[in-house]
Length: 282
Image 1 (cartoon, rainbow, N blue to C red):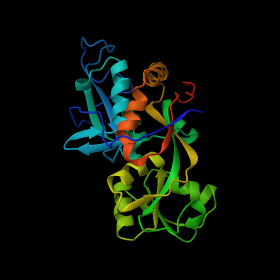
Image 2: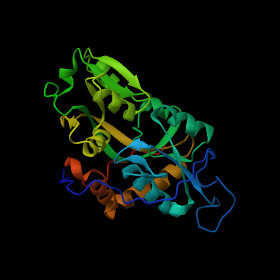
Image 3: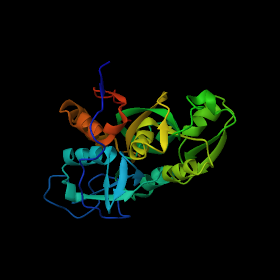
Image 4: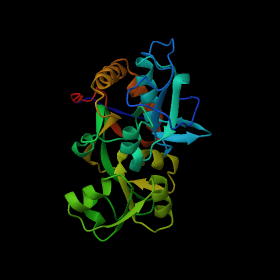
């Protein structure tokens, strides 16, 4: 395994026009009238990303920026869409499946972990990155250094995420769960002492920790595995294969490493430099 340290300044390469939309179809590239951009007939593509996660998907003045946004922009480019052809919409953890099922978006790149349960209703390409789970506490909290220290503590996770359940159910740790609408709300609860810790993917926590280094401490004791996939409507086998080819190219040409360095430089956590093992398109 080759690993690399991220040591650049927190930021994002994405600078894209934002167009909030609720339009989309079950087939990528069919969300508009015919165009001449080589994308198979559609003149725009609607992509769901997070708007509240620093380093991954964050709304900055009407424009989403972050690693997931960069990945989605790259993939869209390989599918024939220029940045100005992308219509962004916010996809929270709780509405990702419904957005794909209802045709609100063509695809989703929003820290969307591939699971067997989710595969029952949507398709996935990827993974484009494999994260691990970690824990965030207040900066002066030295008592929590791993999942086992959460026994009897109040733990926050976002609605639609199973991160907290991984600890309370799978690891059988007796923590009290507090569910919030998103991770920004969890951070507010952590700041005012309502909860003792927040748990989710280390990429998500790293973004918040880098943005607020004096307020929050990332435990940096990762566990588990979260395979970030590109969510697609059920039956999108052909699009899945095209996106997997784009993901491979993104890693082969160094773009993926560049996106990671720009997004998480201030956090200095290690990441694999090779393309993740892609799963079969069903």
